[in-house]
Length: 221
Image 1 (cartoon, rainbow, N blue to C red):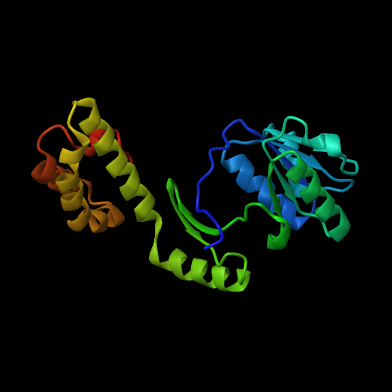
Image 2 (cartoon, one colour):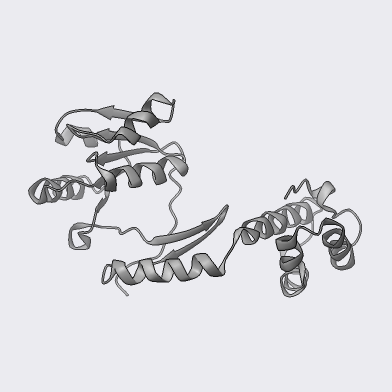
């Protein structure tokens, strides 16, 4: 396996996107959703990017050609232009600075690649073919999107709230495992999917005891 799977915390980190077309726009939106401070450098940018900049998003647009110094202060860079020479230059500049760099659809000049993802709130399922077949990654994503609905995000929110409350009560984390196995193997996920709050509360009380209702956990579905 060539690639080391990892999730990056880019909250409040400076990220540069070179390019302003449809591909660059998708990359920018994902970066913003993850809390990055994004700078776009491109002579032309999409209407969507301009709307985001006007809306107060953490996005700066520089409508000009790329310069090496655009990398100053950046944590990672994504090249998303249709100029192969420019894309390779971006990759080389980033490599010389030991920066994280992704060039769209060119895994051979990236030091990280972006997986196809299925996201349900905090649940993120990543699919990677190690750059061999984006089409297969897309197909697998579509299959998983049908398999994992909104209820999985809600269920994860509930499990996270339970975990935080258990930890606040100074329980040993190892002692939590049987409880979570019971929660996960019960019909709780299906009850969450159907929004049956009274039965959810009954199942929580059965497994965890008093003090673990949706209201006390502050979970709103």
